Image (cartoon, rainbow, N blue to C red; front, side, top):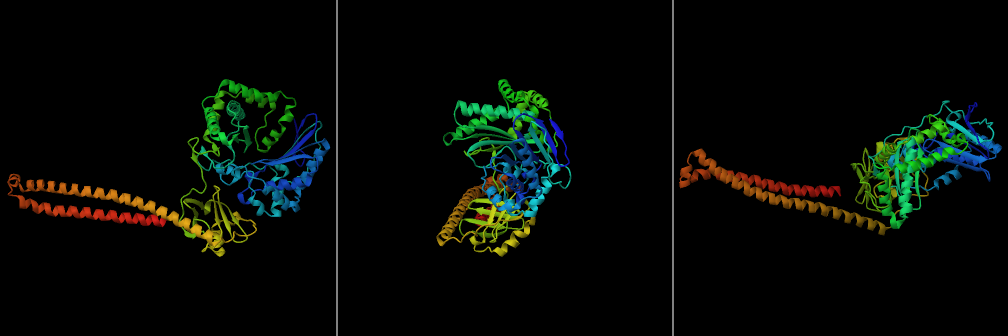
Length: 586
């Protein structure tokens, strides 16, 4: 491999016979965005590709968390000309095609990403399918993002072919003249391991662990073990995968997955977890040898410099050491069984499980969004469903039936603003609370500015078009919603009443027993004490001190009975207060 540093970009070249393959790698990805700017990088790439695409040209691109790739494969001169045209398009972005490319990006389906569950809706948690910012970013901001992030100092060009490239790419100079560092990989947004309700039709274990040679070996060991158990032994799945994703060069993501068939999904999920959990404690030597032999076979191929050139470009951008192929091979060969087991434990401890079958599989907590404490505030009832929004100074709580969702203003990821006055408040954990004035009798568009907009940073507001606000429901729908609300309130009131009555009944029994015990203790204790105090125990036994003793006993008994009666009335009042509280909570 040889490296050249032309005035406008770094170039990595490795000789290999056959078709020329070239690429541009940029240190920019969706982790550099926020939810209100999400999709900016993808749209820049789509617009630049639009300028260079031709029939029959083999070109592709992808946006990752920290690195964006563009690759083209063709005859030598065509690769050169395509990369030149691409750099010119990035320097002067053709925004005239924005509407078409925006529509194409928004039509992509979300495959149940787990990144938001791990990191929240920011940085590495945004994932590759968040495009909310396409409605907010301006043409000038798109051009500015292209100039700053797709700059020469923030890029590496790599080419494999029979001759060294003669490239002078007109990439933007960039604002700093140096490669931008990747965002920090922060800790998880919730305790792990856990289960994420991300949907899908497969069982998936997602983890973030150190990016070491042992990770490659563990991924292959896990893939083979799951393939043997789920596919070959039982025939419960058609596919098993273990994919490593680059984050900041120090940490990497590992996603181990298997497709599920409805009729055997539960059994397959159980076997999947048993196999993955077993690797924490037991990895057979032959498992390690087979996986390692498979990985080392790649180092027997010719033109090793060319094989790893793309990875070298990524490491260069992330500021990590670039090993020679022999060093890569040696690192894989040194991985031991204990290395794999230790990393498997880290994979388990940092795991997010996704499966469409049941919950609580690994004894882990099932995550949900908006799980914060309900907040006090002014209540606004929906007319179409049994739902109430409470808006206060600190945030918003939506009560939908018996479930509550809370979004605090200081934990807001974005506020979607519709032209008709509706709002959608999105929390960093992905929770969503909609405000639709047409679906409330007591919430006006003018109220939302005071109640919501003033509490959210203007940089988080995203204007999003839509054809029209939701229509006012007919009277039948409103009636059904009112009946559902009333039925729920009756159920909750009944639960509160039942709880209060049970407590009251127990209290009555306790009070009666206490009354009897107090009276007996008072009578017995007073009789004995009075007799001793008067020094007339013998006389009392003969009946001579009876009136003196009763003079003490009767007042004491009356006082005890009075205290017990007041306690009884207190319990009755407490039961009433509990009922009132239950009604207020409903």
